[in-house]
Each structure stands twice: as structure tokens, then as C-alpha cells.
Image (cartoon, rainbow, N blue to C red; front, side, top):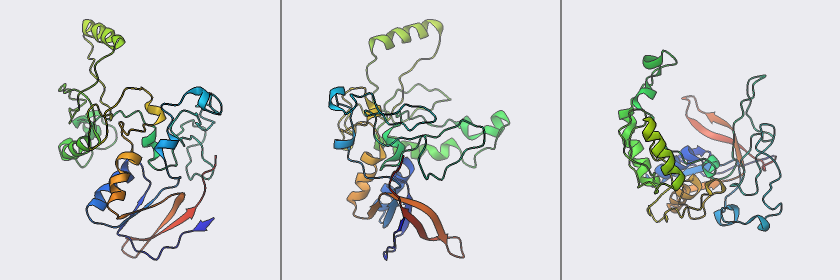
Amino acid sequence: MQVIRSPKVYDVCVIGSGAAGGTAAKVLTEGGLEVVMLEAGPMLDPAKDYKEHAWPYELAHRGAGIAGFYYSQPYLSEFTAPNAFFTIKGEPYTNAPDTKFMWLRSRIVGGRTNHWARIALRFAEVDFKGRSADGVGDDWPITYQDLSPYYDKVESFIGVFGSKENIPSAPDGIFLPPPKPRCTELIVKRACDNLKILCVPSRLAIITKSVNGRPPCHYCAQCDRGCKTASNFSSSQVMIPPAMATGRLTLITNAMAREALVDKNGKAKKMRVSLIPLEV
């Protein structure tokens, strides 16, 4: 175990480089702050690490992989974007005894945004009022109207396709045009219409038109393998690069944040960080 000792003082320390961490780094650095980001995993090179266009014969195990997608095993498909695991040695994560809940984690720049299905739905008004609506939990101290402008900003920047449907439980957003439906989807849509079941296009963080220099999706349908063209959203390709371009982001990889040391006012002053290689 090694400990990083840095003489430089940063304005902000961001722990993790996924959806929240990457967005925070982009906003803060573009706002003029010096930011250090701690990522427990290694750097990501989409050109080398993503396999969306690879053929089975190009891979060591012909694409069969070296483990399964099971609760007791790491997820190590040769095709999938790298570093998605249900169990990680040394991970400070536990669950209640006799429970089978498992949490997919990804120690790599961009985190689980390299793997998610890009489903990008907004919370509805009722989602902020759990106690009032269902008698369970607590109402949020903020409303949908408070967050709506920020949904607008995020969707405009990362690109989300969809259609405006005026559905109370799934608020409309800033949408790119959805892809044209395939034959099977037209059949499903026709059947749903006959049964009066609502059937609308998905809302996914995949661009169908060029956004901020990113080319539109070319419909290879291999999103879980990553996207070398960055046509689907990942923090590693959409949030981290502009933050790095400011010159105000220092990214430290293979750095597990262990403890935040605070002053008498509760303000974080130092981070205790261990350099620990990824182990499975």
C-alpha cells in the first residue's frame, strides 16, 4: 500500500469519475476551480478497451468470456466494456446477512457509465412526494420544478432521444429524434394500440444527431461493449474530456479514497488515499 502525498492544494476533491463525479468535475473546472479527481480504477482507452466492432475470432476466448454474469462471479465478458464486477477484493462494501442483493461496480475511469443501458428518464412530480402519495418514506424537500431546469441542461449536453408524449409519470425532456422503429417494433406498436396499451419510443442517452462534435449513432446495437465514437453517453468520453481540456483537472487513477480528514468546522481538508491495483 502506498500513500499519495501532494503539496498542491486543490479547491475541490471529487471521488469517483462516473456520472456524478464526471459531471461535477466538468462544471467545477469550467467554473474556474482547481479539481483533483480520485478514481479507484485504471485509465480507460476507448480505442483499445472497447470491443463493439470486434469479431469473436479476434478475442482470446473467441468471445465466450472467462466468467459468467452470476451473483457469485465477476462479470468478465470479453466483449463487454471493461471492469464490471459484482465482487471486488478489498471493496469496502457489505450487504445484510442472508441477503442476495449484489451491486454491479466498475473500477475504471467513467465507472458504470461505460456499462449502463443509457435509459434516461426524469423523475416525475409524484416521485418527489412518496409520503404524500403512498404513505411510505418521506417527501423530498425539493420538487420536480426545482430540478427541471437541470434536467434540461444535462439532456441538452449529453444528448437524449425520445418523443414528447405528455405522460405525467414520465415527463418530457429536451429530446433528439428517436430512431425509426424496426419491423418487430411496428408489430408491437400495432398490437399495443389495439389493446389500448401505451407504447412510445425509449428515452436513451444515445445521440441520433451530432452533439458537441460527437457523431450520431451508427446503430451497431452493441452499446454494452462501449462506444468508440462516443455516440452513447459515458462520463469517460463526454464529461471527463472537457474537464481535462480546462487544464484545471488532475485525475489520479488506481487511487482508493479511504478517509476524508476534516477541520473543526467539518470542512474536508485532506483525503487519505491508498494506491491499490485492481484485483478480482
